[in-house]
Every structure is written in structure tokens, then in C-alpha cells.
Image (cartoon, rainbow, N blue to C red; front, side, top):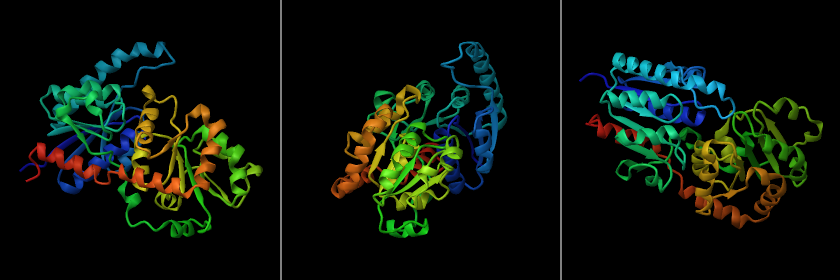
Length: 368
């Protein structure tokens, strides 16, 4: 039997790229001889991240519609035509057995061209409110893998499978207990610890909050692992007012496995992959949705957890007014922390990528 070939497309942000890589890794694990080719958008982060993960990638001249520059949108129809033509050329040359899309600019032309060529297509939607690309592609898809209940209001019900999002399960494998993780990170194992993560670029709102409030909590012997992102790190790391043994400022957190394990409380943005990881971490969580995400999908993601009493949500504009009180309530009330942990753990789907790949291979009859 010939080696199966898979075309995978998704990108623009880590939320689309890393699920795509996770699916590719699982396919390669199951089918070591499989050929895998990625299709991404030129000049986007997938052109760097995918080769780093060990896969080949082809770039399309494609981007989204600009909300700020009308003139840049004049190129959009030409980009669509160019991307469709190149996608068709890639597919004719590579001849994939299936095409898998995880959302983002490039997956639209790539999966559309694949479906036109009669190639089975599969969609993985990370958010509780789907992006435009995946909604357009749904009609021709063989299956649609989702992370939230109720997605049949956006997609054909017969195609929807609730699997969860593919995440870095290695973060939650063979991890130490909370006290041991604190020791590994050089923290006091007896002190309550807050992990604050704002994404790779960081959150200006969250950084401003901690700049004004970190000392207040540090003086209570609360330890803060604060990920600033790259934009604010140079300033905040040199701020003398933040020099305190309980305040640990990081541009990025390389050891997220122990950071999750060490945390007693987590404060985070509400991106789909972040939430999927938080559900596996199982810690009491305050979500601060990024208000400018497309179709405000981060708020919709957070609301799904809030409706199940699995997290607390604070809107971005409310952070200066209410976040300090919400954090203090969690510090003071162990029962609330324990209940939030129980409920968020119920939503974790540690086998998401295995379930997705098993279903794809079954539909393609590669599972025998």
C-alpha cells in the first residue's frame, strides 16, 4: 500500500498553528511512512513554526480583510485568486489523500481547492464561535472536530464531533505536585502562588494591573509568576517598584508544565488553546478575554466556562475596578478555589488529538 499523504493548513496565530502541528505529530506517530505537507500564509508565523516542528510548508499570498486600511483591501480579490490557483497546483502535484484545516487565512483556499478536487476534507474548530473560514468550508467537510457543546448551530449536526482541542499533553504528563513544582521553580512551597499569562505579546491591560497591584499581593506573601510578553518586559523588568522576592517577572515562561503545576490561581486571556490547557491544569482560573479578538470569540469562549461554574470572567475594561477584589476573594476562600478546580477539570479533554486522528483514519479506512 502506498504511503498516505496529508495536506494540513492552518495559521496566522498560534491558536491555529499548534493544533495543526499536534495533528501532524499524531499522524506521523500512527503512520511513520505518511507524507505531510503544510500550506500556510506567506509572512505569517507558520512559515517559521512549521519547519521548526520538522515539516515542509508551502506559502500562499493571502491575508484577511483589513479593518483599518481600506486601500489594502483592494488587493484582497487578487490574493484569493492567486491562493486558489497555487493551492490547486500544490494539490495536483502532492496528490493528498486528505486535507485537514485548523482555521486561519490559508486554510480557506487550500481546503476549498482540495474539496473541488474530490479530496476528503476535515476541519478542526478551536473556538466556541467559529471563524468565517471554517463556516464557509463546513458544507463540504467529511467531519468537523469541535471543543465546545452547541456547535451544531453553526455546522451541520451530522458532521460535528466534540473532541476538544489538540494541546501539548506533555505539559500535564508526569508532573509533580504543587509544592514540589514550587520548589523546582525556586518558590516557597508554603506560599500561595498566582500564575498570570497574557500571551506571547503580553496583555497591556494585565501588565498595567500588576504594575499597580503586584506589591499589594506580594506583601501578603503571595507569589506571582508574571508573564509580561515581549512588548512590556524591558520596562517592567527594570522597574524598581516591582523588586520583591515574591514577584517573578518573565518575558516568556519556558517551563509551563511546572508553572501550571505550581499555580494555586491562574489569570489568563481566553484564547481557545489557552482554555483547553487550563481545563487540563485544573486550577481556579480568572479569564480576561481579549476584547478585540475576531467576532469577540474570546468572550464567548470564557462564557462557556462561566456557565458551568468552571471559571470567573472579568471583562478587559473592568480589570482596574474589579480584578483585585476577585483575586482577593479566591485567596481568602479555599472552598471556592476547590470548587472551581473540580468544575474546570470536568471540561478537560486530554485525548483530543488521538480522538481526532482516529476518526480521520477510520473515515479514510487507514485504521486497519
